[in-house]
Image (cartoon, rainbow, N blue to C red; front, side, top):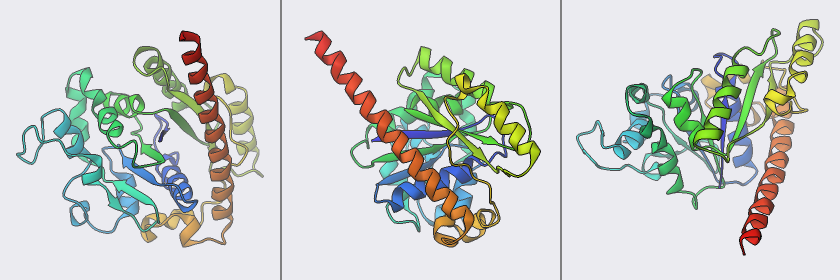
Length: 284
């Protein structure tokens, strides 16, 4: 199982949308995938289901986390709720979802040790899924740290509408701190160039600026996402663009980006496995 988080401390860059599209793409390809809405704003949940989350599941990610740290709000003190109990099957084959919770904000008032709660719950289900995608909040704090501590690979999302690293610098700094202090396996896989209008000078300048800082963001994926006409209907139709508008330009861009990231992840996983075997051999 591989855990991937999409991140940027700047809001409104399309992070949640890209989480949905990539997770759906992996699932449609035949992988068993789980999406976790780890943003107290619950944008991922609202974009994937109709009505209230309680109509689908008795538990959300808040119940999972606070059950782990003995703060279950449902008067089941000390009762641990597993991710499997909380998850639901989405309209996308092979894709499950854990609904978000505004209660995650309470993590900011608790001890740093609570940041490990998500990691512990994920470890319990590592045999159940091929990939887990986590949508992270657009701000610094224990909630984002908790998500990154449970993650192996981070995909950054960059909105190509203006020059400047905006939230990427802060996100990269947080990733580096967590890598050094708590999760040495954490890596930046690359950066998605989102809402990229290739014909405009502003977008070209934004891309050129980003490419000058690959030491910060690892690399920029070759396939960008530019056409948002069909994607903007996702919250209404509750489906990824590859299912709602499969013949659209946006759907084709998403498919190509998914294939590129899937290949990149497979390569990174093989390299990690090879390095692990080498380390084991060195100890013998």
